[in-house]
View 1 (cartoon, rainbow, N blue to C red):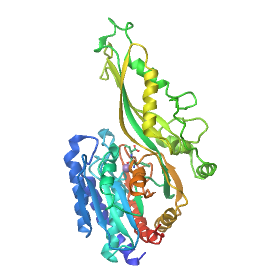
View 2: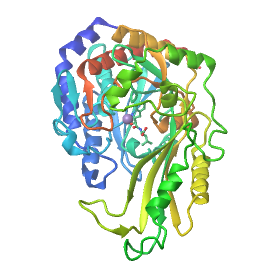
View 3: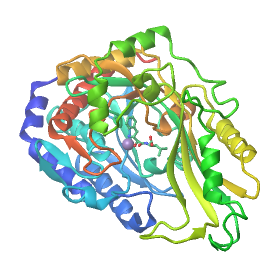
View 4: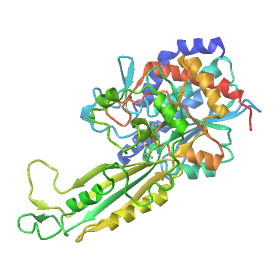
Length: 458
Ligand code: BES
Ligand code: MN
């Protein structure tokens, strides 16, 4: 990479951080309609920013939040990379656990604290700034670059597939690049070749028509909170195996090589547990902690509520009880088929005297990329130049719904290049992004354009 590019990155490092802070001040929370105007402002901030770099950019409307599309297509014959990211963020709650407010970006101890700092505004911005560095110094990029930055990733990307289908031709590319994952650990950068899929649903169990006096009526009718608790308790056996019939039928097992490779990664389980404040490693018997997180399906209760949850006591039999459930899936599992299997299982275990309603929310299959791809090789070289270490190949447990859609609709694979750490508190209070990781990410991205240019087009 040209020396003037690294010089440009150094000279403008402070300004880059300041611009990211300006974007982070806009609370682009997609889950809560109260933030809708801010979501639109956050999209427009990025769109106009692209324009100042001399790129073509526009907002594309969807039935939900707009997609920011930008491109620089001045390298005819060279490959085209499509950078995907999201400008929406998770809700900041619980607010009282933030050391400084979620939407007042603050640098402490070399870390930038704000909701969205790492997930995903800070990581998307590394690619924006590397494109700027090329265009403002060399005047061109070694490849063509398109950006698709959406505003509904944190709520399941439900309008993105249709967007991609409608704009298929104009989004033609050779490879997708996504920085929305993590490094393996500080000092150990990673390329992620697998992500878990997901489906989300909600079950409500109904008992008596209204909350009842538990002294007058209790003992004579079914309590929906107990009923739901019994149903949920049946979801796993003692060995941590999910009991929904057929749940593991399609699971693509880990290969021996992968298990060996995971086992060879440095992993201090005691430190891991103490970082999380968990007292023991718990999960499916026969699998290591990394295997459980990266390559085994799970079923989790995300929220559970029933009856009186205020201060003091209230003597009632509640009328209803609800659980929010998500299952993480691995390669080959079909979210649609499994959400139906889960509903059947819950209905079959509904105790007498209760009824239930079941709602299906978003779903997305898992992602697995061939680790021998020349794109992975090229990205590895770029990362090594910027981070000073060859990246390790890992899978991760989170989900990015669109990556399988890229394969189906655009026919391309995705490079998952995460610059953050999984201890950056994503989705939690005090989310942050190390300023050094932000800078190394920009550097790696700048190297990437050159490394991708030399991958033969298929
Ligand atoms: N950036 C995360 C996904 C992620 C995090 C992947 C860490 C790998 C490592 C993403 O923004 C996210 O949280 N996605 C949601 C998707 C869901 C709402 C459909 C998730 O995984 O819960
Ligand atoms: Mn994200």
